[in-house]
Image 1 (cartoon, rainbow, N blue to C red):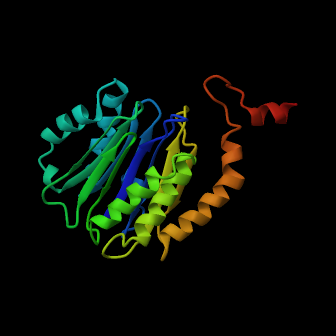
Image 2 (tube, rainbow, N blue to C red):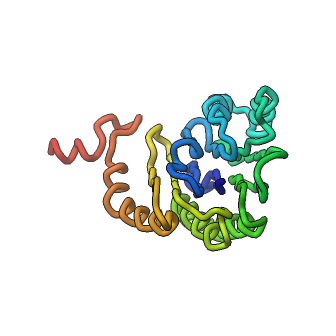
Length: 225
């Protein structure tokens, strides 16, 4: 009941996941990102351990294909799973179980894995990929929002849409972007509104937080004079 894209920006090294679904709170279980591991989108009949166990293995330097092959081999419910995975090097891999609800499929490329299930058809996924590939000059968060908008415009979920999310991490363990629409009549439209709000009011604050290299952070430095 979801389409998603897990991705890495080759210019900045940022990692992220964007997703939209017909159910509420898609950001809770679908999107998983870690700065030292990669980005994972888990969907269809969820198994969050594909992300929670997969990200530490990616952080060890193992490839997404190797990691997913191992994790799926010991998952007795794998034929109803769907997952896309990208590591911090930009290597990608995806899996769609044989019993994921139609239409279901995935597409991978350098730095991204896009997947969808219970879609109107393959044209939805094709449009998501086209828009993402054609926007490489933009910031990763913007590219993910554009991909979600394109997917919904191209038909999206056969049962409509209700929630959407974009999560992006840079070189710190906390998110640079974490924009969620948990319940809305037009979640892609609301995601765009919140993305603009976040960019104007929240992102500047996050960019002034402490980092591993700057434990004070710019905000505290300005406050203390």
